[in-house]
Length: 158
Image 1: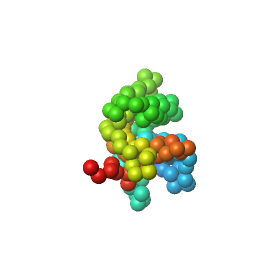
Image 2 (image 1 turned 90 degrees about the horizontal axis):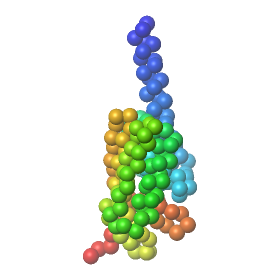
Image 3 (image 1 turned 90 degrees about the vertical axis):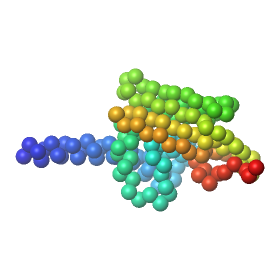
């Protein structure tokens, strides 16, 4: 009986963390505004998502599954500051001493696509709950829409 109770408690904790990690994915499925698009990018920044991904339970073991709202806010502010920086290789760390969560965002390159839109390669590292994750994404800044993931964006041929 004790084992059954412990198993149910463990499953409840896992389910709670998975639910928290799935919120950005559910928003992605519904369609989101441009500001939320970058949130989804960074919240899932531990493992690159494919548009065809069906089983997204792996997010339950990502740093974001341990994030509090304040952690997400710090991460988002940090990412926007790095992306909006004029520096070609801008890098900035964030941390929340109250929760122990931390990370950094780093621009690893930038280019302009054919229509004149600025794109940057953004490397994001997050750490929370003893779990670390890193991923790199291409994001482009569209007029009136802000920074949006554009996995198809490529630098022009040289």
